[in-house]
Image (cartoon, rainbow, N blue to C red):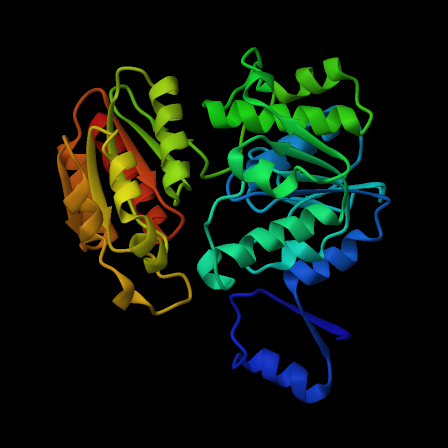
Length: 365
């Protein structure tokens, strides 16, 4: 091969990395390679942000596809009903998300840059908050035109950009006909529609197209719609994401008892956000917090997820390290009419879902 493209999760002692180096094969991180690949497209939409990148990328590509365009796209998740999450299109437009967690978004030169939000998530892997902010600034500086959702953080970072458009709270369309719930999705959709219009699509076509968007897998995904009990799976793993998802679930399933099984993603986040996690989880009706998913790092010395449970107020809450199958059986046995089980987290907690759903279906058959 001419080139080896690797994820930032791959360590230097990986045998394929070592073999490539020994053979003199060029090795390049995925995000840097994406920036090179994008240059083949005359128009490049790069979507950045601490939260919402995957959904907004999927929304914009859906709008363009529905309108009969042939965009290239690269979505960091499975788009419901689409099959493959990536396509080269006809080579004219590329719609892609870009990643701040390893700094590679700063390599992207875009004709249309998008920043949905800019929080301090991932700052530990980049050398601190200031380094993370600089990566967002560098990304914006390489965008010919920038669309960003207004917040104190985005104002501070991008106010000096020569071609910036701020989407203010008043501009978030509340009249959108969406199949995905929540204010965060109305915000994401507003941005996607706005960028589609900037690309040349008539507003009426963009609005009609977004109405048929069915979402991205593991984003408020209904896994079981039983006669009395429902199960939803969600990717949220940052306090802001928990807040948005729980609010959306209250909106979409009014009157349901929200029973959350939450797996923190990385011990770093537990150490940094334990009180914020507890505050957001306290908005549910019951919470079980599990041992964190460590990603590729062994840093369990940093924190215990028990500290989240210790700060949850006003609702039943407990910490567990039981096996996923046992937790699923427990949840099914404890289920009552009106329950909405929420399997929440970006790690291995997804193993709970099929067992829980299987138990519930067996009970109702």
